[in-house]
Length: 376
Image (cartoon, rainbow, N blue to C red; front, side, top):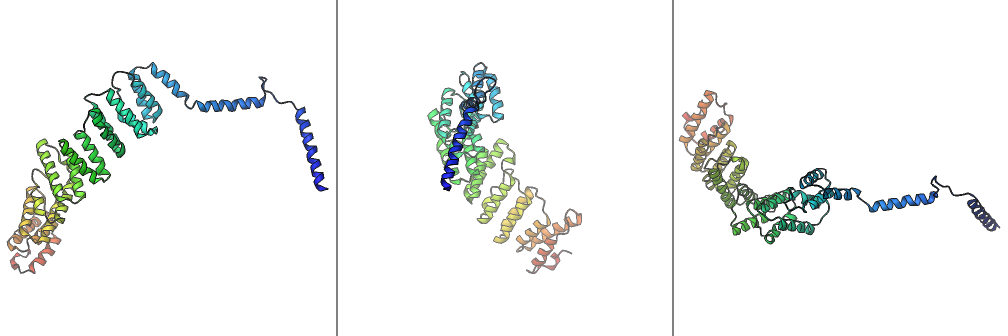
């Protein structure tokens, strides 16, 4: 009984709804169109609007056709600064229609293509077409500028692809090209690739630049190869002499690392032989060298270090004097000379009373030195 009642109520409700819906007229807009159609038309307009994702694109394309090359260049630079990579590529395509070389950096074009999700093969096709059309003396320079930009972003994959493409364009890597490749690979700690590039440079007869030698020296230090490190250090030293370059090309901490490696390998004599030609040394480096002399118990080697320090005008502190006394502990005459010099500086006030030196001296007297050598 309950089910029949519910069915009857449902049927009555359906009939009543149909009757009421037919009796109420559909609302119209002032224009006479039905509201539902107007709403549907708006949705259709939105769909059609989605089909026109960038109406600016067509406007820019049409305006570029009437612009001169200089105006397009300005639009290119403005779009690149605003990260509008779509507009950048539109300006680039417009500039390629002129006979003259586009006056913009090809590195910026590649960066915009990458930001616009262009894949590597498409970028390479664009580069190949560009260099084939505008081949000239500045082509290698443009390639190097591109490689430098890619190197800052550590994009080794595209860098290698660009370099592999050079022979097909009648170009070859020069000093700057190898310098950029070596620097990027060193930054990414690809030391085996650094050595492979060096071998390729030798086969091609491309000489190393100062910065290239510096990268190779750093690589040798990182891989604990003293022979290679000394070879590249020698090349750097000759560059300082021949080109009168400042020592900023080989920071002092690099030379200090070379000294530490020579000490670890117990080949201090080989390193000392290279410290000529205006190479600057510090007191910290002198102390490192003297510590190795103490370990080797080599008085003659310590004398070489002392002489080198004095020739380079290194001011000896009380710690350095203490290490010299340790190094000369087997020669009473040398120790006496050092003590007199240190005490004279203390009297003159050029050096404070050396506590490390006094402790070292007390230990030295236990070895049987004459008492008249003890400082009063």
